[in-house]
Image (cartoon, rainbow, N blue to C red; front, side, top):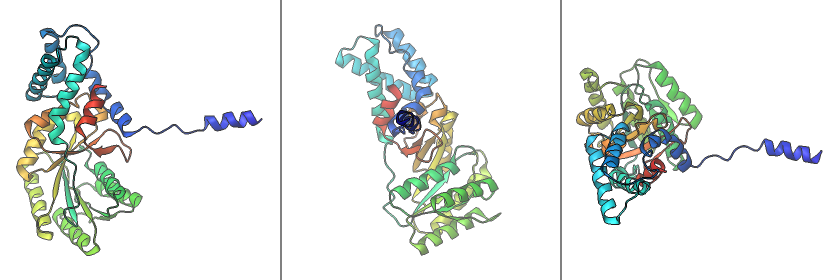
Length: 314
């Protein structure tokens, strides 16, 4: 009987949760498979470089980043005297780390109180979910958080944020059918009065081609500045990694309109186009503050270039 209880107890033991490094590796698996198929062996030659170039382009690294990566790899091969295809993995991993290193700049929220973060992006990029995860991340750092539900067009967005707020004990400033700029103004003033550390301001999703909506978001940015001089202190553009090269156009358009200061790259676990981060590095090198590889609350973490490259090529 004792042994039966022991067996039952062993069977009910919950699985050991994966570390962030393990989740990142699993999340990048689709892109990793796209990139690592040539490293099984054989000689390093021009034909191999051509195949490697094709793989990088298929992973949406973009032409400029692909050329930079190949140039770096060729230099490493020459300097180290590499000859076998299996040795290219380490060279490409190092080349990717070198390329992405300038993007790895952690977000410093200690410079202002309240520190105002304005989130922008197209519909479906994952802004609302990202806000909930960011709130949890900042709370884990001991910061108090207030959320401004500035997406007044989509009732579901307000409701979802209010659920996140209740779950994390975060106050959400929301007004039904209100001017989003007015919501932001009230939220920033509320944060100032209550001594809140961080304000996360949501905005409605919009396409950069919708000129009237882009003008509206510039107005929101100006109103936040009137509520608190110098704010917003961070303009975070949320990008869906599944959009591949289209993400580059979003970066350019939103940056031109708002002077984007940081990026959040979401849904890396659902795409083989994770190489787009390399294209961003060569096109518009805006810091990547966070990356996301899942739906769990802690599946959004600060971006670290070496960690990302290691997960991508191992």
